[in-house]
Image 1 (cartoon, each protein chain N blue to C red):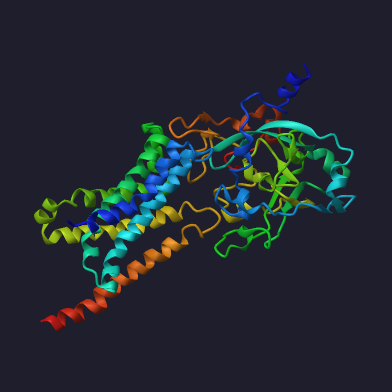
Image 2 (cartoon, rainbow over the protein chains, first blue to last red; image 1 turned 90 degrees about the vertical axis):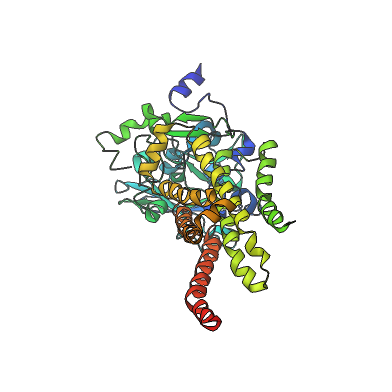
Amino acid sequence: RASSSMAKQGFFTEEALTPFTDVTSYNNFYEFGTAKTDPAKYSRNFVTEPWSVVVDGHCDKPGRYHLEDIVRDQQLEERIYRLRCVEAWSMVIPWVGLPLATLLQRMAPTSKAKYVAFTSVYAPEQMPGQRSASSFVEWPYVEGLRLDEAMHPLTIMAVGLYGRRALPQNGAPLRLVVPWKYGFKSAKSIVKISFTEHQPATTWNQLSAKEYGFFANVNPTVSHPRWSQSTERRLPSTLFSPNRIKTEMFNGYGEQVAGLYKGMDLDAYY
Amino acid sequence: MPYYKLILPALMLLPFVKLLEGVLANDLGPDPVAMVADYTGLWALITLLITLSLSPLSRLIRRRWLLRARRQAGLVVFFYASLHLLTFLALQAGWQWQEIVKALSHQPYIILGMLGYVVLLPLAITSTNRWVRRLGSRWKQLHRLVYVALFVVCVHGWWQLRADGGELLPYIIWAAVIALDRLAYAYIWLPRRSYLSR
């Protein structure tokens, strides 16, 4: 069956899905607030149409790409991925999206492009977290990948989940999904893609470099300074049986992605 | 009937009743352990702040009975703190001692949380009338440890913040006001008053 080869490539897993209501009501999207329920609560009127993405840096086709043009003529795919949060919980989510490589190739990165930087939307009038006076974050949220990570077949730009359009709390209309990295690498509501020669700054790394590295690959052997990463709670969990499972290296995608990090000291490049 | 000694602790236990409702209705969200840990920790801090606000409040509104409810209120603090510790030991660490020892030796915020509890423990034990009599003037000295607990608990919470201080800031400010009031009362008003009463 075609599906078993898809599973072998890591494109889907047969683990139980995290229910839609949990995926859409328990989110880290600090632009809307730091409580898990804030994003669903405060994003109801978030405007995702029209939407466009500015592309710049080392590429032959920079410019402004409209969302319709990004999605038009694309075969959207369903990918069922594990999502491992750096806070030691995880979900299984059926995303809908397109391989990021397909998208980036249209922008024709030049040989100077070594990294891809992503910028999330800055809309303080719509996002209470960005207006918060007590926030330690300098908005907008920025993230980045090495070009080979961005081009990897597992990396997708998601536009939906559970067979429907993504909701704002999940990063609508356009969010990254990099399943072998901690969730914070998967930038939400992206408005800008830049091809850079040097490693771009990333929000969590700037906030606390000791706790959050640029790579942020899921790695049970490297503890977060404030908690262990060796296990995770697979959500939904219950009070008296927290559904704790062992965390897998590269979130279980080692077979597909370990080659990207050959020869790298993953204790130093966490 | 010292009803005030019951009413105040009963009010302070309302958040626990709400939590119990959530547990019974299975309505604590997809990650209930984390939710309960945060909730019990936050209410331990809030009830501690309420307890420490009783004496300045009694001065402010000139109601002595508020002072007499302090020990009961303090026991409610200890109740929330115990729930919070149990959540960590039983639900988060699953009584796996290896893991608990590792957390207690590696994770500064957990060490501080434990320290806060260890400081509160003798205060809870010595809150009976018998202990008050037995310890005499040393009882008051011992119970000044509550300010150590307050400080430790505030840092314990602050070290867990990641991206926004807003969640904890109101309580930190409240704690600072209590501390300033105590210092002012001890070093500015109290000596003058004792001078007058001589």
